[in-house]
Image (cartoon, rainbow over all chains, first blue to last red; front, side, top):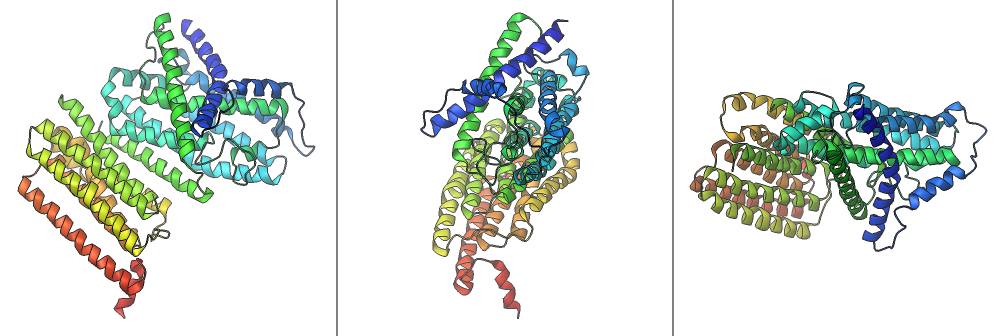
Length: 313
Length: 219
């Protein structure tokens, strides 16, 4: 019972923290670039404003366009129930493992691309085709890089993997872990629409990817999509933090352990946010045709991660 | 230092050197090639110190020093100077395109795992887990030499190949005698200097670093 309660509250925490995380990364990026930057909590106000606004929809759209924001939001929310955010073996682990997480994320991406095509605008189609180009290489890489850990732990269950790494801390510097981390980090940049793959701070570029797909959305639909994108960033950050460096994750469900885990999670998210902000300040956007090369790098790394943990078991 | 920790650290350093080798395949500019080679050599000289400490072999510290001076300071410096003199040419069209060559390098490392399997199975060394990575680095270096078009990037590929050999020798034997290792170093240096002369001549004759042009010499 306590497990289920914790599971639901961790999903709520993810929902509440996610916009703050996005705002935090933006704020740090602004500071690193010598600007004052908007306050990190501005994102919450933006979301509230968008929820209150009227929705304008093109006449040429079908039900897919209206259905997609709800689907994207709920599939992302479902993922937060499945990944270890604060405590490791949780009751929902029985429902789904790594593969379900990957496919739920892909489901959201797939419907977003459909919704980009639906109104028949030039930008939507461009964004959708680009997103699919990236997703086709990125999604298997996510699965592979975590498979590298799964092979070592003997289970594709995310909770089990975390518990296993906690039990054998020296595994965290094995080649499988490191290569997998590098692979997942690169894919995270691509999947959450960050530099050097996509520029999250503008939708006025011909080379935009994510923003091009959601250009037609407004009002509460846009709010849901943006919120889901923020949660997606949080999901990837916590996968990186908790799968590869699970220290702090509560192994027992006592209030103290969970409290420590929550603090550790926030600290790890902040650290990763800082790293991403730093990278975004240092890196220029890649040419679109070089993006598959970058993703090929991360795919190869993930492949090597799986091989080394499989053969050196 | 416990054996387990040592094994993990050596695997870590070996994967970092392999990462630098793969980074070579992704980048295009000569500067990036030199950077990757330099960082790889930094990790490798750290590896010499680590193995020296774990195996209790003092000579390896001296080796680490030599290695550092030669491969982190001297050779990158000369590569840069060479680049300034003959002009930096980007590796814009390698014989095999970048995405494919990355995938092939992944397969090469898999191959390295397969062929070192018997070796890893019989070995009792704590470093045995890293042997396939070193072998993979040798293959990747060779692959760079074979598939890149510009003379200078091929030289860097050769140097990476040599780093792979040094890594494999160190992991497999805990450091071969100093005198042999010094001989190898001098060979590398001589090889490098000879290549430098070749690069000058290629540049002088063709006004370009593209080795494709050498095909014309056949007729």
